[in-house]
Length: 149
Image 1: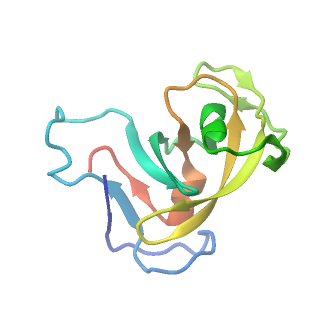
Image 2: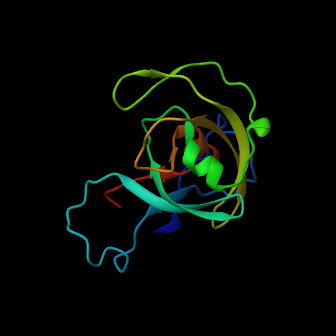
């Protein structure tokens, strides 16, 4: 996956971060598409650097109002339960069920150009993904994700 920039206006309602003037676009180059079936409309699943680790199977979901980390990844990053802060709002799972989080944790994430702090809601439910990056992360980066691009 490559990250590129394209000209666009910055919104004054975006979270505070270093102004780069041009938002990021999450996308794939033609070389990265080799071996895939096109047109491609599958979920956007990538590898991202969370803390000091390259984390695979992270889904980018513009429909998610939160950034989610699943308990298996939390344990895999050697994080302790006492590092969690309370998060009491229930969430709705993919199956439409209400689920309660284990808590919340703020962790650094490395992009090509920046390190940003992300508030992850930690969930103890099954998922084929290790984490889901939603609108809060995308908006902080000023990023637009697209399976088309």
